[in-house]
Amino acid sequence: MYKPLFTNIVMISQKKEQVVAFLENPKNIIKWDSEVALVEEDQNVVNISRVHEALNNKESISIESNDERIIYNIKGDRLDYQVMFELEEENGLLEISETVLLPVKANRNLPIKLLKPVAKHAFANKLENLAAVVEQL
Image (cartoon, rainbow, N blue to C red):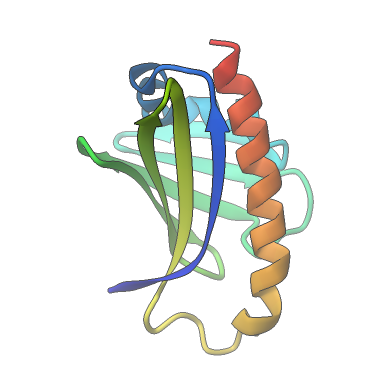
């Protein structure tokens, strides 16, 4: 069971189908997340390593997708979480909503309330990077 921690939103000029295809390919993470140093596929999971020290230095990501959303299920060395992308076309633009969700019983040793604004800002920057990349597709 997961609960939302925060949501970031961007608007772009791109077709929904192209953004869905881009997000469903885990190898594309390295194109928009500058903190990712290495992406390795292992069956239905992608393992990533980070360039700099982070809350999770290593993560395993599996992706699930349906007509309404794309969810990255992330198992980290310190914290598990989900990143849910919802895409909605509106007046010729595409809204990408990115929600970070934590397990209801998240690691109680982590100061989540203190980490939330820092994480929200970092994810917002990565979402802006994603927007810039997918607009060029």
